[in-house]
Image 1 (tube, rainbow, N blue to C red):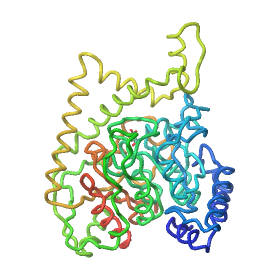
Image 2 (image 1 turned 120 degrees about the vertical axis):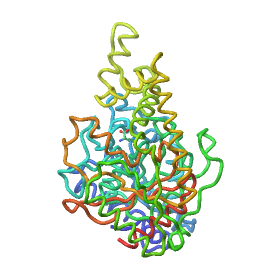
Image 3 (image 1 turned 90 degrees about the vertical axis):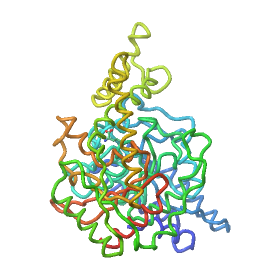
Image 4 (image 1 turned 180 degrees about the vertical axis):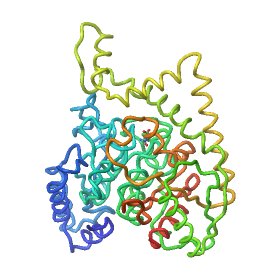
Length: 471
Ligand code: GLN
């Protein structure tokens, strides 16, 4: 399977055509996506047209873009003008946004070819893609296992070679965890780095868009294109994209990498073994491993499952049968709202809306939502202290390798525990990424998570690139 940077070099240099690259990927989709179900929608006709246009432009002497001819898949919670955007929910089925998300415009401008919209846990709530209203996505490495979630379709699409790269969204781990489970690279940038304009909101103070790719260089290349200030997103950081590709070969000599001494329990031994191997690799490459304490880490999961549902209950109030998507008719307005939401939302989404509404309700607000915000401050302070001593921190991405379908669906708490290592960075607004680092139980891939402080993407990518070289 061709890497993103190989495609850009080939299409730009004339040894490949965008058309041939796109056909190769559409072929793989045709052969295998019936089984995998990475996509909710494959936009083959438009992809062919876009590829032909890129080829014609290059032939006419136009400068090739930084993603020329790269087939990219989009999580189906990013708005695409005139193209169905469902969030894998019945309530939005058939809804066609009147505008493109900022990232979509940036991809097109850079010469990328969008091949389709990928499956997710409904409204990005879940860790296995089993909460999709349209059926689960399978892990391409073992179809009896989940691909992770919520961006399971985007992770599977890259792992199966349906797209050279994809975009996902990460609110509590939804890029990094599926990347780990499918054996690909996944990056959650610093909050405010990539515009959220046109990303359907789940928990606005945590949501961030980021790339899935086959390797670290591809991720750096793609992130450089999609990052940067956007006046249409009021939380976008007013500065240009950080340059990442040039630091990839810097190595880690002299860098200080943190080992968390009070990591929450529950991680499988095969994963912990790979984490130790990762520390060894960095030490061998000249980094110093430094112990750090993050005492508030143990409260992060609880805080997240108050903050994220609280924001979701507010964000999802707009799906009322009037302005978006499907409507169930009823004799009066209130009955119509109720019937539409009752039939349109799945079980997990309803659970989150109820949890969030409760946490925000009069009399409970201070005890739940207010307290969760205080924990959020504590973890932020813990990280701030740690980053006076280290340039990056390593943890596992997921406590286990990809699990079997149905093994956690009866127990929401077991599913929530999948995010124990990924959630803290979302609460802090920091960047983090998952890099494949060898195999664990049943020969399934293990992802190592590299964390850094706000706008510390260069340190994070240096460490990630070193881990990739070592693996
Ligand atoms: N699995 C987490 C949840 O269910 C994270 C989801 C996400 O990052 N979108 O909320």
